[in-house]
Length: 172
Image (cartoon, rainbow, N blue to C red):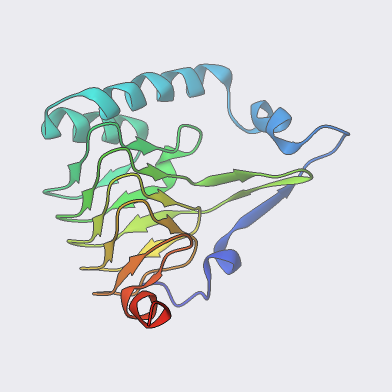
């Protein structure tokens, strides 16, 4: 885990001009051809049945992929900034999970690296927001929205994801 505070402290903020929202300015940062290239390799990473092929496609996108990474079917890396994702050794990213490195807002867009630590597990249909670091051996339950860092060895669940111990305390 990084010592640089919360995910918000690590986000790069890029103000945008004009009356339109920031999504209209993505071409100022990325070429259309690069995003088309990225999309083609995202397609391969999402649908290839082979983990070797998936990891090959992720590396073509610029994702840092450690040994033994398992990328689930239909899991989606950020199509605009996939090079900001690091998947460390032995981690699992589950079915239809999404790792985002950008947020387009009204007057700015934000960028942040996403790190999935060694042997961490990201469940099915999880969304990880930009700037989030998931620590080694951490677990993110299926269907969760990860808005904050997940410490090493901790299990989180929910929207937004909170430590599983806190979840069980709320239901009592």
